[in-house]
Length: 157
Image 1 (tube, rainbow, N blue to C red):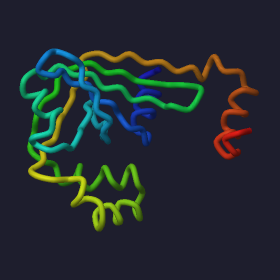
Image 2: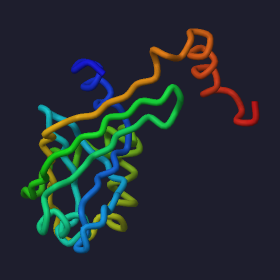
Image 3: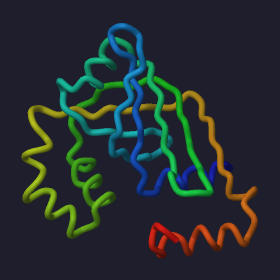
């Protein structure tokens, strides 16, 4: 992907998989909402979450953001994470970005208390390198039209 395509893709409504390293060195993948801003990934999480503890011990991480609908596209970033103070702007942005205005209001009113427990932190990942792939160009025009139409058709068709 070009830098512009990469930025446009990462601005979409995709869930990231943040991969940290466990105490035994094994990768620990976690799906998580993110914001990509000024070249960095921002995540909200609990101060005592497994991913936070893993970053405290070893800041090396990977982030995978993918489009699971064909033609497939993905961005994989490798870098180091840092732990920062909670960010109120990020807390407001993420539910609105992923759920829309009405969904974000519902999230704050009904689900937030059950999902977000304890003190929070912000994990910031500044990628050192990227890998990307996008199979759009290899997909013939007729195939792209079919894949777009398929989004609105019954799954069995």
